Length: 384
Ligand SMILES: Cc1ncc(COP(=O)(O)O)c(C=O)c1O
Image 1 (cartoon, rainbow, N blue to C red):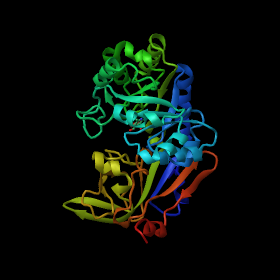
Image 2: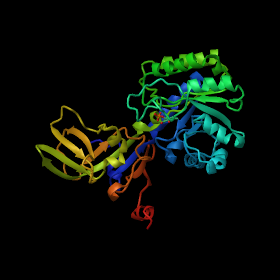
Image 3: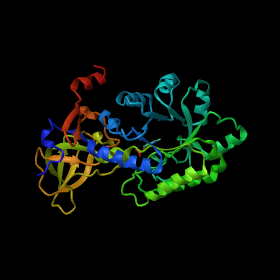
Image 4: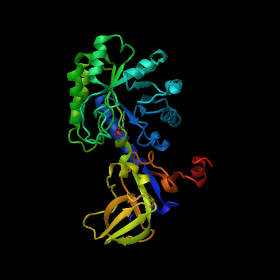
């Protein structure tokens, strides 16, 4: 069988493999959009802040981070002076100086947060996050425009602040929103902006930059032209010096694989169960969202059906039902696909099941192990 991931070279499983060629391809794709639209494009590092991945973002303008740690990480990884933009609902007072020295742009999440830090502003460019109050995500756990949202300032509040105290936003140069997740429909973005422009009208002209957030997949989009039209509208009708986007998942999701091995096989209530040496806690969004991740070789028309289960004591540590051409055996490899984003960053060692090794795959040099987690690290984490 063809082995595009050089599985035979893995020292052991489970293992995350990140295909750097795929990351580079996506970054290049975005840099073409950047050249065509004259947008600034940042990589929002939260889905995967892996050094080797950050290094592949050379063709983009910089990074969007959510914490001091992320900010320092990108500074350490990329010594070539790329811009760092910061946005978070949580800025601790005692971290202000550290954050300030690590970032070039900083977006406040609330008017209160801005007022609290106003006397300590430095030379960064500051922005405010607006909640455009245009819901695109049904599940309130992931919808920044949900009722009682903590993310961003409602438009009405921005409007009334401007009319009560026109000088309030004097030191705020930018406006930011982020409202979507893995969408390939750019009408979502244009409708979101439309809502903003209807409500804020000319007040939008007071801002020097606008950041349209992440949450979009740019390939295979049927209406990417709407994105270009929106950028044209922003350029023609407003005074923005910079139009910024900060995709995350698009750049890394499809580059990530989790390779696992079958360690037990049995039947329960008439179904085949295959227990793997991994767990949903290595792909926590499987449990969080209750979705079935793609598995290489799974096809509805295949005869050999298995419930793939993780090896923790959690009854719901189950990936789903899959069908393979050949019967699984002890030691068979099961490869989860499209798991590059929000997996490694959320993975944990519940039950003492070690984190997967991390490998990077390069077109020229093949597979390289960049990290293994040891028993000593595990013991140390728990105070040993
Ligand atoms: C403010 C902000 N920008 C960008 C992103 C990246 O979004 P995605 O990875 O869906 O592209 C997120 C994700 O939560 C975010 O909160």
